[in-house]
Image 1 (tube, one colour):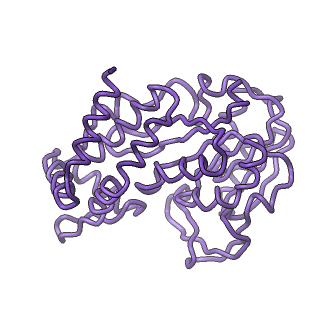
Image 2 (cartoon, helix red, strand yellow; image 1 turned 90 degrees about the horizontal axis):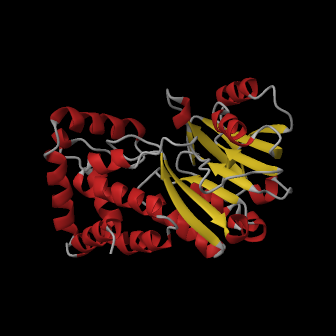
Length: 313
């Protein structure tokens, strides 16, 4: 057995051996043992974005650690499933690094697996070439991912690009940054599992704006199955926790067209296992990879890359 498998199975067995309260106390003790400045930085980050729960030790609020504990205790077998579905040892080491960070606050292994080789989403070891792609970018933001795609594969590598975002500000940035490229459409819509009306929750950092059932302003919600009739060959999603519902609303494209899927899986502790399981249940031809583009303190910018067998061939 190699060291990555050995370390993962060892951690898996350790977590499986604990009851829920014991697991919570272990994680909490590891948190209390990290340096004060790092601990405060983690607290400020978590409470700013609120994806993972509130953490306020001075008031006895450990909601975030409780959520972390629940994900590991209730779903460690799902993480084990994911580990065994991953196609390369780079992906397996990334998953080991993430779970080690969740349990031990291990910063060293997380730092080790940060990917600095290629542009985010476009790992040439997984997707070496692209041609005539029909691309959907959910969460286009400033158009940065589309520019990375073009810089990686060339401006003649796509037939059409559909850009979705939920704010006027992002649309202005994206349209300006992509104005020199043809065949790009912009749609100010939320993408979910229903055609409905949702609400925006606005933040000072526009990259963190998100939708919910209540909020600051109304926005149209659509499914990709209804909104795009073209055959889709690539979908990127980074939509602040709405990825799971957006995939549900894309199931017909996923089942029938096998698009390459580049999905953010870090907006909550459960996305890391439940999103690949959803994709696999829709279409068992998909193969899974993880790539990590975040920092060394708290794991964000985790990307699931799902490619069907025919694409790999």
